[in-house]
Length: 235
Image 1 (cartoon, rainbow, N blue to C red):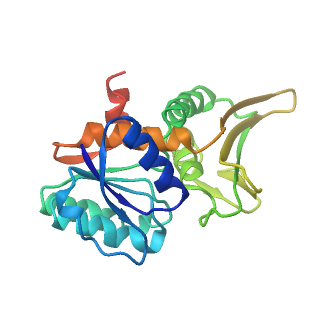
Image 2 (image 1 turned 30 degrees about the vertical axis):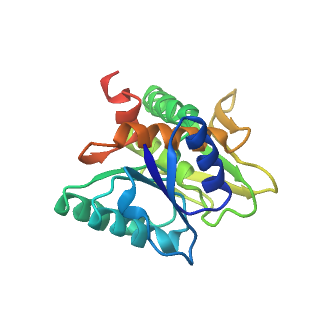
Image 3 (image 1 turned 60 degrees about the vertical axis):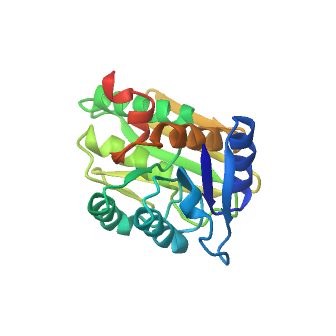
């Protein structure tokens, strides 16, 4: 499979190594200054760029009829526009706030736990996310996905970075050097605490998941998520 890498920072380089190890070819390595020359040769594109570049990159893929896997966060105010463009161009698109296979299992655990706890008013939910100091968005896209999972499966109405009221989920954001990503969900009562936690040891899991998603998406048409890639919609 021929892959275009849109974004060639630390994550892009890890994705490149894993893709090559899995027998794929890289036909474009695009940094922010580079052109899209070579994109038309790709079977699929993987975007791990920056928020300011993501919409342009995704649009170019749809215009060029290249399926795109996007793991860039911080641009989602334009997500509906990109979905509409994908449909207009009869393209293929997967966006994921986190492509780690373990994190996507963690999303499912989070949803299930939120359903279990929904009627136990003695427990108050909160979250914590820790990332490296170079991460541009806060809270992380993964944390937002986790928070939305709680909102969809409970009586909570919104999330906040400030002091939470009884209808809000508080997200504590920390930036610490050399932390790939740690996400924790806490349910606290006066007598105990329930915690679920995912800790990434390195970027390998994110990169592997993105390559697996690209392998799955190549040749397809439509809007998909990692639930589709991992057959979690069929559970």
